[in-house]
Image (cartoon, rainbow, N blue to C red; front, top):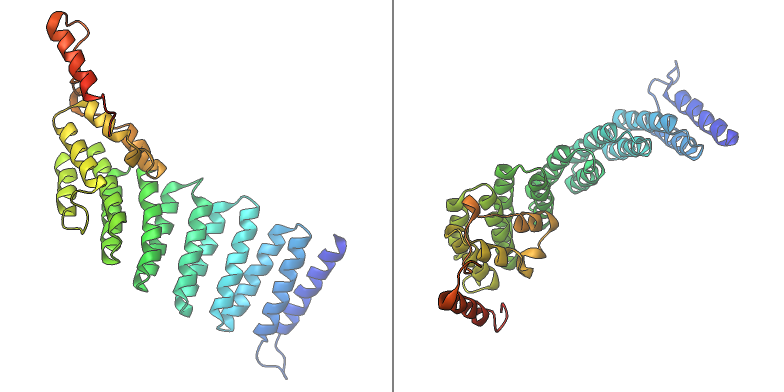
Amino acid sequence: MAAKINEAHDHIAKAEKYLRTSFMKWKPDYDSAASEYSKAAVAFKNAKMLEEAKEAYLQEAEAHTNNKTLFHAAKALEAAGMMLKDMQRIPEAIQYIERASMMYVENGTPDTAALALDRAGKLIESQDLAKAVDLYQKAASVFENEDRLRQAVEMLGKSSRLLVRQHKLDEAAVSIQKEKNMYKEIENYPTCFKKTSAQVLVHLHRNDFVAADKCVRESYSLPGFSGSEDCIALEQLLQGYDEQDEDQVHRVCNSPLFKYMDNDYAKLSVSLRVPGGGKKKKAPAADAGEGGAGAREADEDEYAGGLC
């Protein structure tokens, strides 16, 4: 342990020497200094001195920045962020990763920037959902600017799910619509159908039947939607909701099509209730005589062949 610490301090001393100027040396040697700071950071890390390792990485980043090698400066900032992560100082770690992503963009490597933002989102997700949404949206924007729509829509999907988890349903509705538009642009129509289902659930939880119905109507322009399993289920859901038929809504929402959606949407599905408590089509137990028996027989006939 002591040997590693001494090694780290030796590298720091060498780095500082490379940065000094003199009568015969007018310009600091930033490249050599950065290399020494990097070696010092690794030695500190191996000695479990994470705070010192973080500082060494920041000094490496500064040397690379002064040397106009922004990609390597960004990598060093990310490494500093990882030291903070290991110290359970996640919000501070995210700040350095965000700075690194800006450098990647400035350096002309936006894909690396977006991937860094994605990693940051995963780090902060368990502590701050709102910040994670912000990071995923930034990553989506970077990918979209590069016409990397498949990657962009994946980031948007993460953002939409976290917005639903926070019950920010107005924002979630906008985000899901953006997803749907992108999937349509890349001609992934089956996933568009799934996004329509997510939209309908979000809008119904917002008590906006008109918006939910509009999403389904607009989806009829998508190739293959009309007559699809998704289409039939959504029409049944909307009909049941509009008629306040609690049984029909419950049956549709608990079907495999909805039950096996992403977890955040599946929760919306099983918790959906019709306005005013709804009504049941089954005959009340208090009914007696032929009318009650007839209703029971009708129910048995209706389900005799199963739900399918």
